[in-house]
Length: 335
Image (tube, rainbow, N blue to C red):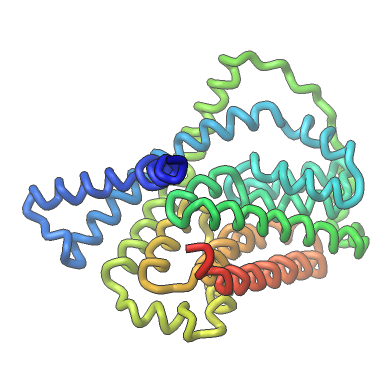
C-alpha cells in the first residue's frame, strides 16, 4: 500500500504526469501530432515549464517562510556556537535553506567572513548553498526518484563539509581580500516577525526569485526540448553514455562556463537521461553549473585571492567528478 501511495506522490503530484497527458491530449485535439519532433518539443516545453514553475513557486514560498527565521545575524550566531567539523556540518545544512544560486550566496559568504566566522565554515556554506537546497530535493524526486534525490543531497553536503574542512586545515585566511577581513560587522537584532509578516516576506521572496529565475527556466526547458526531440540518441550516448569513460569530466567542464540554478538545469538533465546519458554524468553537469558557474567565480574573485579561488574550484571539481563516477557505478541500483 505504501509503495503505491509513494508512486502516486512521485508521479502524479511531484512529477505531474497527468499534466503531461493533459497537454498531449489538448495538442492532439488541436491537430498537432505530438509524435513528431516539433509536436513533441511543444509538449515537452509546455509541460516542463508549467511543472517547474508550479513547483518553483510553492518551494520558494515554503523555503522563504523557513528562511525568515534565519536572517544573517541569527545564522551568524548559530554558526558561532559550533567548532571544528561540527561547525562545517551545521554551515552546510544552513546552506540548504538559503538562496538558489551561487551569485546569491556569495554576498552572505562575504558577510559571514567579515563577521569573523572561520573560513572553512563559510566555505562549507558557500559550496552547499547553490548545490543542495530543499528545492533541489523535491525537483530531483519528481524526475529521478527519491533514492537519487536523497543521495544527491547527502553527497553534496559531504562535498561541502569536506571542502570547508580542507580549507580550514590549510589556514588560508591571508588569501581573503583585506577589505573583507577588516570590514567587521554590525550585529543588528532581528525584529520579531508575526506570522503575517513572514507570509508577506515569503510572498515577496517568491515573486522576486521567480522574476529572476524564470528566464533561466525557459532557456533550460528550451534546451531540454531540443535534446529530447531533435538530438539523435546515439550522439548523447557517445558523448555522455557508458561508452565514454571521460563523460563525467566532459560534463563537468561543459557545466562550469554556464550560469543557471537547479531549476534551469533540471529539464536539461531530464532530457539527457531520456536520451541515454548516464546518471552520474548528468548530476556532475548539474553540480558544476550550480556551484562553479563562471559569473559566480568572477564575483568570488573580488573577495578572495587567486590561490584560494583555485583551491575552491579544484576541491569542488574533484568532488563533483568523484560523485559523478559514483552515481554512474550505482545507476543500476538507483533507477
